[in-house]
Image 1 (cartoon, one colour):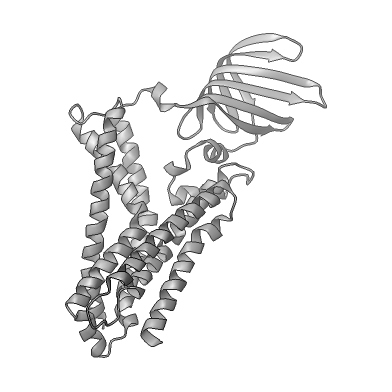
Image 2 (cartoon, rainbow, N blue to C red):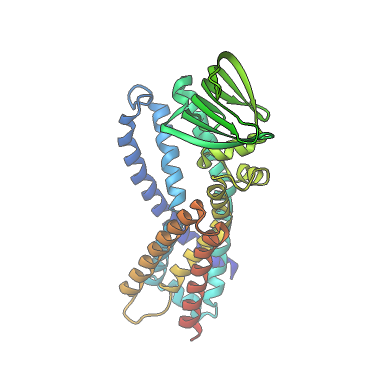
Length: 358
């Protein structure tokens, strides 16, 4: 039975790989068109770096669309097996549909774990390597924040509010910084304006600025240190890009940050989504089996296959909507990540049991 399941799994994996490759090519074409909008990239000026950047972005999108690829590829593979009557022969020889499903499900689980724990980490490191090869100058590493990004930082004497117009990807470097500090009990208040700010060991190191107190006193400085109770991990998670962190970094950071951090919900959602990916892929596979297998006198029913694909796309859309809700803190991240996977497994298993066992 294992050899038969492996045969069916190989047949389905070829179809899944084909669908994934088509998604990859489509996204790569779109990314290649967008290359002209980046001043540091050019297909003719720097072809290898450009193609590497495009390829990594396309791989990232292809892995995000993996549940759809599993569903559509499995449906196509099962249709081919149905047309060749291989499924009918297998079932007539006494092999249940669950025996056929076991090996593809195991491989799907392994794919999910590989993508979450190895693939995403490799993609992020590849993107970092490409950015280093680009030799981006220091000023362009700081991303513009429009009218400014505000954060609150706590000290032993109260809270101060920091505003920056340019911010690095990790959130630890700033430019064009304004700090507003006030303590009503001590009747103390001041504003600090600095050209640059760097976080280091529970303090902000400010460069080239001026301090204006509530009494009107003005004092210039070349270097000034402002203490804070925040850790490096807390600042990185609060200001840095969650999308630049792999699942291991997210797990370490969430254990060491304060939970009033505005980015904790987004980090928790990405972490839970990575953990739930194997279950979501199994749910997609179950839906493909439920709406495709089964004997039909006149061959495969196109309407049943269409229903399965539509349900898969609906599941993907619902997954993205819940991901948005979990990232914004509107919904619990664990429920938002595992909910679609559990629903897909329940629907696929229920339909398959009803069709096969009545």
